[in-house]
Image (cartoon, rainbow, N blue to C red):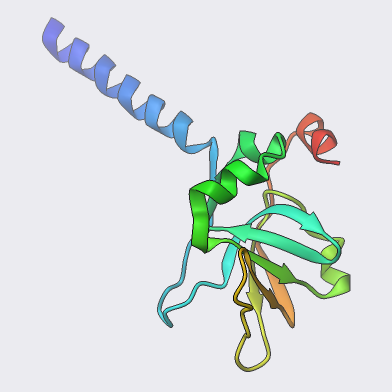
Length: 136
């Protein structure tokens, strides 16, 4: 009976430990059905553009560690120019999906660059008031 109780406690510890770790990372679901991904986590905003990556640690976003995040995601980062009405509604940590009209042209630069005709916020960032203040 003691062994059964001990294994139950260990299993609970493993499950809780794994779920706590998952909450520190923001990850966009990638739809690769057409061979390209057009969604990501916003890690930076500048001049009407947002910088997207597939996933990022919340703490790195809060600390403005864009270079660290880019080093992790190397070729998977992209600057997306978004419509001006949408730019003010998104923030770092949001998961968005972007859409172009026809073929989306991606500049051969690092990070890549493109323009969106529209965007959808798939999941807004879940920041506390204190964390949101750090981002501003």
